[in-house]
Length: 188
Image 1 (cartoon, rainbow, N blue to C red):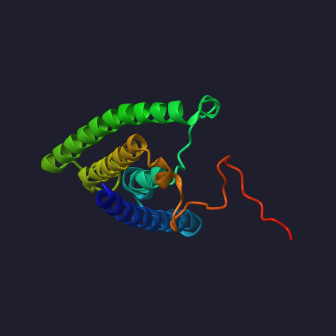
Image 2: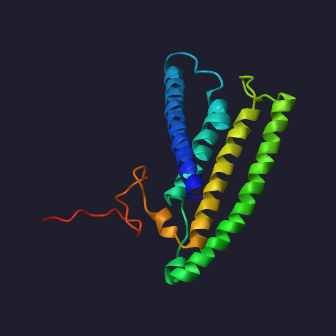
Image 3: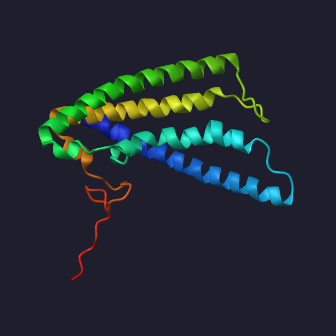
């Protein structure tokens, strides 16, 4: 499992970089489109491209990385009142239930994406580009997220969940403490 964990970490790192580059490109294209409205005609199909390709890439390629760093939004009102053992059991159960949903969702997206590729479906907007690859990007993100959930569940069952909780050098914000507040530096 350690090898799979290392492999998924590297895959997450690659996908989050791709998502960041996509976000930057999307910002540039939308800025250019908005700027050109003042001087001439805007770029055709920018909104469709952003909605159908770029946003799914940003969201779904980064979803596993976000899980790795425990940065997803979660309601923990009840979890704070539990001790470590019931909290662990509850996390295992929710991970397994979520895994069923995510794998099924990834399968349906994969099936839909392949169907669109085979049929040669294109967008309905101004630009006539294939829609299948965008759906396949969503599937990739969901399957990598499912792998990350499997790893997290394995480490929870094994009892090595502390290893997964600690942020590494790719941390989202290492200054945020376990309560969700920014850690203050001590004044000497």
